Length: 257
Length: 147
Image 1 (tube, each protein chain N blue to C red):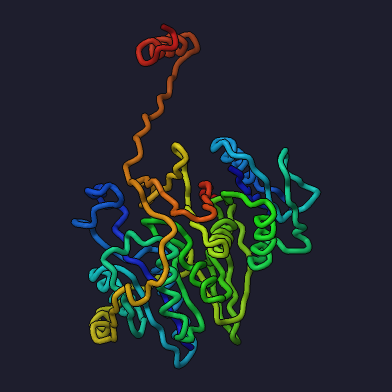
Image 2: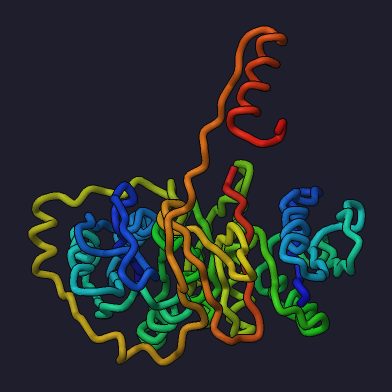
């Protein structure tokens, strides 16, 4: 069975972000980078499937600058067999359609039986790439899965809907699934597997070789949202509350002027 | 400008997010029509044109079928914008429609400022103004966090 898992390297969301000089993205220096959390579940599920089906081969793919190879090595240490890096220093400027097109261009003649992606990335959060890849390749896709099983060429999954409701969905392979948080428990790479990962194949090709479309959108401006003032709870009896409220309205607003 | 609002129905109920889409269209100041795969027993309180497909016939979740139903309505209505809820249904269906229409999909739109959609980035730590390149249609998703 041939399996592909697509991952993205994202900054740690607790980072202190700065807006770049062009004002259209965040500065990528001095950030701690990690695997997109949704993709960790995708990698774990792909590795579990590889372990279930004898003779499987699992490729991890990522798009971005050289530093994304560090995140790919974690996926290799978790159990992926080989890595395919689409080198692109400007990947943050690519829109979901361009990213999906590159993945589809890579995957179209490889005969993957199953493709795993995260349901969305933590930084851009578009939740589009997985489904776009499937549509481009004319594959069935199941999005936002929180349970996965595979038997007799058929995927059975549970989709997470709102309000705690889940939906059972199944489809035949080849197919693509996008993974929601909580799908499984991503494993920690062991030290021996980290060492083994260093010897696994990791190919890199320039994005230009796979990018054959133009983007449909761009970030015109990025900025920090205005901080909204905190609420104020007044306590006491009604007469005191009325006095306090009138005082605040006089001091802070012009409604009583 | 015209927006096609994609309302949602589940387990015999119209989802309240459907009305968020109506409010969104009013906020943007666009005329609208509505698409729903649901039931005539729980119709939305909506004054515009409603295109209703019977969920007992087409299923509540069948991406390929819902996609085609929606594309048929888009062909008829020719909206400049298709609006989905930022929900499991919207996440699944919107990219399929965007690709079929060769259109930009702008996800997780939290506001529209002077006609420009603003989306959230990095767990809402940042905001970004998104510019769709000239295409037939753009399709924002209103934010509706998972409960």
